[in-house]
Amino acid sequence: MNIEILGTLAVSVNGVSITPTAPKARQVLALLAVRADQVVPMDVLIEELWDAEPPRTARTTVQTYVLHLRELITTALQDSTGGSRLTAKDVLMTFPGGYLLRSGDGSSDIREFERLSDAGYAAMDASDFAEASRYLREALALWSGPALVDIQAGKQLETEVKRLEETRLCALDQRIEAELRLGQHRSLLAELTVLVRRYPTHETLCGQYMLALHRSGRRGEALDAYQRLRNTLVRSKGLEPSAWLRRLQRSILLAGADDNQALPAEERKGVRLSTAC
Image 1 (cartoon, rainbow, N blue to C red):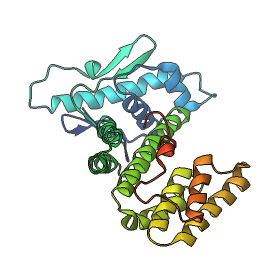
Image 2: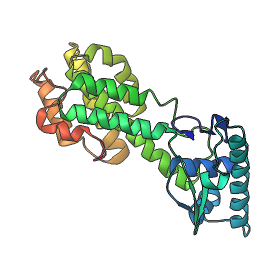
Image 3: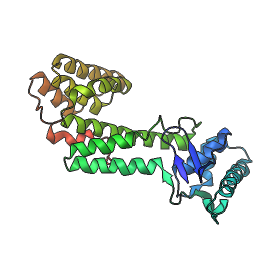
């Protein structure tokens, strides 16, 4: 089975698509795919499709969607030239209270993203910034757009999409961190200019932008970027910037930032967005 989630949904068996066209059937497949090899309870599927107001026929309707998916899987298995003895129920399995989509030894863009990003984080920890940049660039290249961009998401899928976006941002800021440490501040400026506009309260990206500007001889613009972030944080959240970013602002103000590293060493842990990074 091939599962693609980091963009539009695409699930195939033996190279044959099993992605349905009906919106709610697509939701069911998307949730099963994003949690592949895990049992997804019936109640979770019902909440995804209808939130707190499911119809009386909700369970039967979900079973109908599962039956339709199994019909697509059966067709894909019949098209196989490998003589597989698998049945649709071996791929989309029934368990007490729920269903499990078995990925087998196929490919998954989520699993590949996690593998590459983990390798990138390990290289960062080893101060091998060139390798970190390479792995993290490969990981980020797997994204063709927002996760499940073509799916009408309910609460369960919204949570999964937010989680995936967090992992993408984590990989992105660590890739930029690695490349700043390689002295690529000028080549990063255009990308960072777009990112700080897209994420106006993201302190790590702002700090990286400030450093790239400062090292490019644009100290005044770096200080302006800090002030814009501060104004936005105070106005929208009633918060001041974090201590590490305030220290970075002061070091740039005094023209004392250390140009040999992307962020002060004692604050590197603050760069990462979550412990998963």
